[in-house]
Length: 175
Image (cartoon, rainbow, N blue to C red; front, side, top):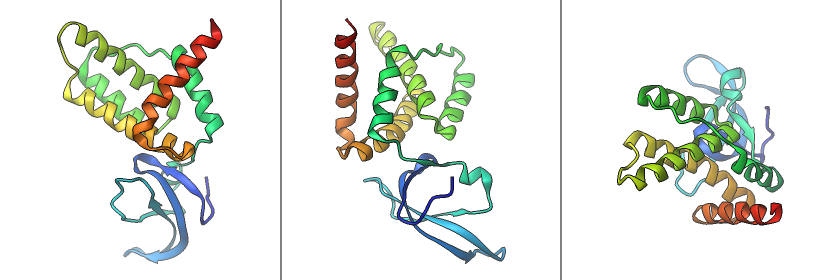
């Protein structure tokens, strides 16, 4: 994706950003063209991100912000999404890191749902998720909730209740 100045995008784990400039900079290796992104999230550090225009891997992390319609479509598939829980914590951690780094929203939702289900199952036994699994949930929620909140112009704290309400409405419609 090659965004224009003024476009809002999602960049990797940095969340929703505004493309504030496209300019040449010399960071020690000669002049290069960069996309300058400014994170818009409430908890952003205010540090701009410089993405080299000639780096396909980094450019691949730039995605369009989902539209409300696309988010509704994602929410609609949540009940059908099923990912098997990975029992081996090391293998699971590697998979979670891959899912976070990839930033695919459907995959994020599927693995977050699997982790929520495991958390619920463990709580019935008086147990808790591992710290690493809790970290995954927080990272995935941050990525998804920031984008959903931006698209719907709501607070991030309102996203989980919004999703729950949408799922319940869809379940009632299908009965």
